[in-house]
Amino acid sequence: KFRDTYAKLLVPVLSIEKDIITVNELVTSSDIQVGLSKSQTLLNSPKFVKKEFKKRFNAFADNIYYTDPDRANLYLGGGATPKTEQSIAYLLRNDILTTLEDLQAEVDYLLKEQEKIENGSEKGPLDIVDLQMYSKNAVDGMVKYLELVPPNELKMARSFLEEEANLE
Image (cartoon, rainbow, N blue to C red; front, side, top):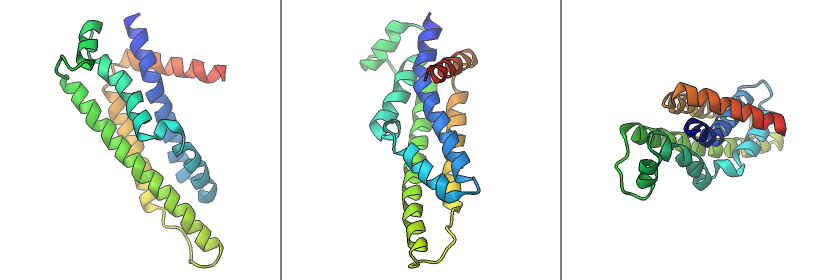
């Protein structure tokens, strides 16, 4: 029961991971114009807004490292010191968020540049080196973050995410 609860708290984080992987595939595809456009749509979804993004990660990280639910709730109220794993999780989350903000800005910039190329005021092709670097860094950050999750909870959460996807 306890594991189920934490695995369910991880599902929104895995949903973000899934979209980050999709964006990475889009920005490394041969049709960069379509890839940019679809990436912008994904990255502009509410889950990538800073407050919602942190909320999704914190719902999981604030509780997962305490086996006693009362202690987890005490931590949320400011009455317990975060464990080392939590501090690392918050640092990784913040790195992912910063990288995603850079990625969003780069996608927006490149779409504007593409427009200039199309109307003849700029020469192409687009320089996508930074775009692909930010995208890869976001994927790598998610990998590092998820390495902190106990394997059984991660496996369970992935199956919950799959179930959700099958219901849609």
